[in-house]
Every structure is written in C-alpha cells, then in structure tokens.
Image 1 (cartoon, rainbow, N blue to C red):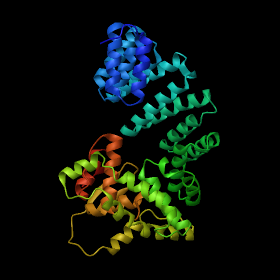
Image 2 (image 1 turned 90 degrees about the vertical axis):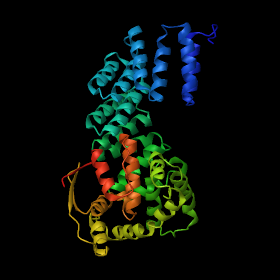
Image 3 (image 1 turned 135 degrees about the vertical axis):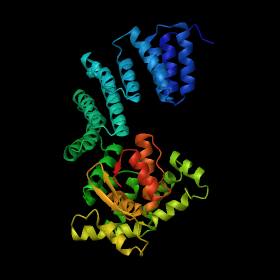
Image 4 (image 1 turned 180 degrees about the vertical axis):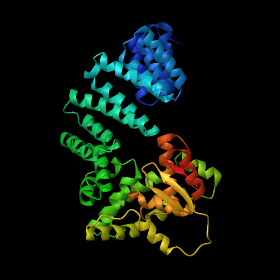
Length: 398
C-alpha cells in the first residue's frame, strides 16, 4: 500500500536502489506505488521504463518512456530509454533521432548519459552486426571523452568502437591512453591484450595479460591465451603452480552452464558439459603451445590455413562426399565436407587453433547466441554450418 509520507523523489530513490541490486520486480512495485500518488512524476515513469527494459518487457518499457516524454518532451533519460527500446524493435532511424536529440538539447556535458547511450549503440551493433551503430557509438563515446579528458572509461570505450570499425591502430592508441589514465582498468587491458594477440604480437599481449588477475576475466578466451603464452614464452610445465589460479578460473567459468549448454543437455543428456570437457580442451593446449613456440622462434606470421591443411593430411581416408561451398562475411571461401569447412573456420580463428572441433562449434554457438539471440546447433558439423548461416555469419552456396 502506498506510503503517503514519501515524496516522489523518495520513491524514485528507493526504486533506484532496488534496480541497482537487480531486484527489478521490487523496484516496479515501488515505482507503481509512487505513481498511484504522483501520476505526473516523470522520474517514476522513466524508472518503470528502465525496469521493464531490464525484464525485457520492451512494449511496456516503450509505453512508460513515451508517457514520460508526453509530460516532459526534453527529458534526457526518457529520450535515452526510448531510443534503446526502439532499437529493440529494429526502428534504427527513430532510435538515432532520440539519441541525437540529447546532443541538440545540450546534454553533452552529462558524461554518464553519453556513455550510456554509446554502450547501448555498441551492444546493439554487436547483436545486429551493424557498422552504423558502432560508428554512432563512437560519436557518443568521443563526446564523453571530450567532456572528461581524465575518464579512462570514456577513452577505453572509444577504443572498443574503433576496434569494431576495423581501425585497430587507433584502437590500440586509445586503449593505451585509457591505461595511462587508470592502470587498473582491467577490461581495457584485456581488450588490448586480445587485439595484440590477434596481430601476432605475443610478447606485448602477454605483458598486458600478466597485469590482470583471474578474477578480472569473465570470458574464457583471454585465459586460454594467457596460459598458452605463459607456457610458450616462459617455458612453464602444464602443472606449474603459477598456472593453477588461471586453471581454477577457467574451470569456474567453464563449469557454469549457459543457455546453449542447457539446450544441448536437453537434446543429449549424456553430453559432458562440465569439468570433463574442460580437461579435454586443456589436453589440446600442449599441441597449440608447440605450434606457437615454432611461430615465435621463426618470427614469421602463421598461415591461417596451415593447420587446417596439416589436419586434413593427417585425417584417415574417408568415403568421398559431395563437396560443399560456403562464403564468410569477410570474403573467405571454404569448400569440402561439412567437417572440413568447420575445420577451416576453426583454423582461421587464432583463438581456437589446436582445440577440438566440438569445442570450437560449442563456443561459437555460445558467442552467436550472445550476439544475436539465435541458437545454433553444435552437435554435428552440418547442423552447425547451417545454423551459423541462418544467423547471417556465412552463406552456403551448395
């Protein structure tokens, strides 16, 4: 029951605290209590909109933001919230007009708002693979960086956007600038390390990886890379105590079932999605470490298709199959059986060289789901290729 002694601001503050704790249902109850007493309180309508967004109730969120903007058409948080909701409905132009309006109204000095809008655009750009949204995200991140030249977060965000736009040299400069402003910015350091790794600058990548802790990592790829670089460059044995904290973190991250894992377990209850898989994948590390050591010793850039060719040569003779042909978005072409195509895709991805096809398919399916919301089968090569084709990552010609 509403408490008549609370002001609308107090209801908003209570709901905001609940929202920050992830207690969205309770936040909504508080906000609706406040609106029962103060139906024209713009902040309460905006709060309902963001709580609905967090619960992925986009139609209701849109309604709340629109109600707020009827009461106050130039409300910055209402515009940002409505823009985010419109992106969810695929109304890109309308969403961009909402975001642009915040700039026209002079809210550029609100660094948090500029970063919020930039992150929204960046996130949706990742889901939709839209260069336009990454470019728009860069605009808002740069506005934030201009307003606060001492913000490591703003500088890092500019770097993230530049990387997604293919401007890696500029991205590296921005990420290094962010680390000069805040050497403890773990996200920027990990991002920089991964870019350097992809450029085969392994010593520089390890330098940055080693300045992070296991608890800083929420993605397995960086940990795999760090372990391999340590073993290759520092000549560590597999069971070296120095690697144990990283192995433990890897096990911790891999031991949690994601949505794709749960779906696959429903289809195949005997599938090992726990530590057994981690141990199997870890068993591939020695092979990859040897290959990486050879690359470092020769100081030559590895051929992205060399491993695939070597694996094909080592594969026992199999019955002839009708060759298939696929094209990736970056212009690469793969032909052969479904397994050979998956092998080629795996070997072209530096992060998965030396790992099993099964792990490559499962991790790629997980990445696809996180970026697009589409579930890709990973229990066999043909279903996997057809799945990522449906998600728009490649085109099957035959």
